[in-house]
Structure formats: structure tokens, C-alpha cells
Image (tube, rainbow, N blue to C red; front, side):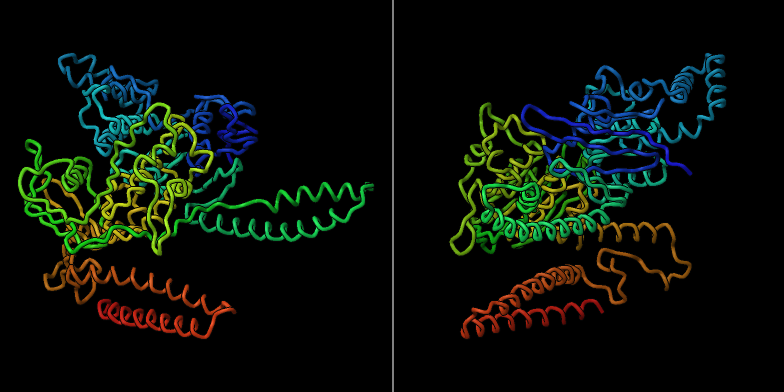
Length: 624
């Protein structure tokens, strides 16, 4: 079966003033391909999407579309007519089936007009629109767009994004171009959308920071890096594996080029002034080798030993805290004592009170009743969804220096404001740019740096991953993995949550909050098994295996909640100790190590090994 090409991108280029985003990019989009585009913020992702959708023209090159192709574009901030209702927006279409459904819905409201009803009914029959009507209602329901008569201008930003997404799915285009489709969707909506894309034979080109979404939806990843395009014919896991191989090959090539460069440099220095044709050719080759040898990779891995304010025994205590808005209960007599070094994720549907909880905890809002007791040594760092306030004429470096000049590290070292910005992908030149020139993602990154430079020991992050590219997410995750204080995070990014949290607060609504001992993937496994056990009761009561929070691992000897927490903690501690052991063993490779230093290193290595043995033994006890 021949491949049907929908779009051919031929040698396109785009620049803004002196800044070249990309040059000479070429690729194709074929039927049923589901392509994810990965690049740093500011590399030109949105510009490339705008060019593909026809909103912008490239500076040079061309985009060729298959004749009569239907294309839909989901922008980060959709352009919708505020005067229309939700229903009018959906039916404002040239799609014949949607027009027939709109006429039928209208006829149902006026059954006295029998002729109009019969005409609408016949049209539905002729187009076999009944299944489509069911799908239309399901999509609106899944995306929580229940008030069909509400004006678009009255919708929140998230609701507008969901309406634009529903509109796109219902119009059934040949090609979907999407910029961050999972933004403003809760976890349930994201998983529904994944399943929808899995069963529909759609063609997709999208930018998203949601790595699980890339993993489960895409069959090709393309990466835009330093103006070059790299293609990987697989999902996100495949991309990570092959990208690593590509980087290793590039580094090996760079190493060879450096050796050759040294050799050729020596030859260049020994050459007489008169050049033969052969030597001129070799000189040209020398300059090419020099370019290859000077290539540098900047992976921006963060490995910091932060020396933050020491926490006392009392961190934060919540005693019978309650909060409601009219009839909506957010917290109901909630008790919790935070421990040092806890890493908690918060999940739940939109509107269940996650952000309200964070505001009460940090003192930005007051509870209706109960007490929040904050330890004397606690220094909060609170990253909110609101973002940064921009002052005209302010430069990037000036913004962060308003909050601090450095973060103290162990052994008397420190990381300056400029160095922190560099770690979060603001190079020296970018640090002296005006803030108003930054993209949305870059502003979020800068805001994050203003929080971190204050050296908090209790970090609260409310949707920190929105608008951040995957490269920045990796940097943030590395930083948070090194963060020794308390961490409380609300995020719809499942990959991010799996990597950095140890347990979850699950907001079920109506003031119900469950404390789950595990990360997001653990919770989904538990939650689905609970649903299945409810749907399929066992015939014999004695064989019934009820799944509860305390035995979600379905062990024969069920662990208590505290034991489950210990089990999860031990896995992480053992992995960390194994890493320390590897570093300690590397010390013995130093030929200049003195006898005394060897003895000290040996004692330390034995301590680490003893700790591994002790924790592993306990881990086995719990896992039996």
C-alpha cells in the first residue's frame, strides 16, 4: 500500500531580526503518522506550527499541501468568537453532519412543527448521523463542557482551550496540528484523549511537554536542535534510546576530530609560505576539521549539594482544617503533620480545591476553621500558576537579583544568580535581554529561578511544568531530585510526578483527601484494580480479594500503610546508596591516592555497603 503524503515542507527558514530560528528545514507528514516535535523554548516550535497551519509564511522555502486536505490547528491560546455560545461554536461549521445535528437539536426544542422535525429526522437518517451525535455528546462530556448555552467570553482560559479541542475533534480533519493539547486538561481527560487518539486513524503533528502522551500517542519523534532536524521512527522511549546513541556517536566523532585537529595544527605551523595545490586542499580540510572539533554539547545537568536552612523538628502541622466555598467543600477536618524531606504530589480533578489547599498551607488564604502551625525554621518557596510580573525595561538578570544574589552550597561554595540562570538554559547573552522579549515558556523558567534563588526549604509548586519544554523539564527534575527539603507539587504531568514524588494526596472532591503511598503510575494501577474488583465481584466470598490502599501491591501478607511507605522509601534509598558506592569506588582509580586516603576511602565504602545490606534485608522482609 502506497504512502499518502499530506504535507511536504521544503527548505523553510524563519528568523526574527538577527535571531535565526531555523534554516533549510525539510520533512514530510504522511497519512496516519503521529509526529511529536521536541525542542527547547525559543527554538522556533510555535513558529514552525504557525507556518504549517498557514498562519505565518516562512522567510524562504515552501510548504506544499495535498489537494483538498482538511487541516485543523489547535493553538495554545485559541481564537474563538466570544459572542457565540459553546453549542454555536461547535455548530459554526461547514461540516454537513454537524449542520444536520444542529437542525435536529433545534427541531427537538419545537416539536409542534412536525414538518421541520420530519425534515431534520430524515436528514439525520440520510447522513447516518446518529453515531456522530453520540460521539459529539461524549466528547463534550469528557472535556467537561456541559453548559452548552454559556457564552465563550464567559469561559476560563482552560475551558476555551478544551472547547477548541472538542471543535477540532468533531470536525474530523485529515491533519491535526496541535500546540500543547494537554494543557488545561486534568489527568482523566488526558488519559481519555490518549485512548481517543489510539483508536482513531488520525494524522497528527504536535508539540507537547507531556512525555507519557508522546509515549502513548506518537509513532515518530522529530527533534529540532541547534537549527538541525533529527527524526526518530518510534515513540518517546525509542527517541530517548536513539538520541543517546546519536550523541555518543557525535562525541566519538568530535574526539577523533580533536586528535586530527592537533595533528593538522602541527603540520600547519611547519608549512612554508609557498602553498601547493595539494597543501591548499589540506588547509581547507583543516578548517572543516577545526569546526567539527570545536563542537560542544551542553546537557545542563544539575548536580547541586544545596546548603539550605536547617529544618527543625516541627515542619508544618494541619489540625482539623476545614474550608468551603458556599456548598462546595474543599477541606473537611483535615489533619496532617509534614515530615522533613517529604515529597508529596497532589492530584485530583479540576475544581476539587488543590490550589486552595496550597494557598491555605502557605498562608495566602485562611481556613474557615482549624489551625495551620508552621515551624520557626520553615522558609516557603511558592511557584503559582499566576507567573511573574513584568516591569518594562527590566533585564533577565535584574529580575532574579531582586530576590537574591546566590544559593549557598555545601563546603562553603555557592551558585550565583547568573550561574543558576545558566543551569536553567539562560546563557550569558540571554541574561541581558529585556524580559518582555522572552517567550511564555522562558518567562515561566525565569519565574522558577526567582523562587529557587531564595533558597527555600519547603518548596510548593503549582503546575510547574505548564509551558516548559522537555529539555527544561529534565533540568528541573534534576534540580528537584537534589533538593533536600520538603516538596509539595500539583501537576498533570504524570512523567514528572512519577520521577520526583514518594506519595500522593488524592483530592476526590467534597473534602475527601486520600494519602496514597506511591507515585502516579502506582496509583493508576491501584485505582484501576479497585474499579475492576467493584465491577467483577467474586462468586465465593471466601475467595474475594478486595483491593485497598494498604494492599494495593496484592501481596499475600498485606502491608500496612506505614510499611508501604517504608517499602517505597527503601527502594529509593538503596538506589541512592548504590550510586554513592559507584562514586566511592571511582576514587580508587586515582594513582596519586596516598595510603591514608586509601584507608579513609575504604572505611567510607564499607559504611555504604553495610547500609545497603541493612536496607536490602529490610526491603526483602517487606516484599515477601
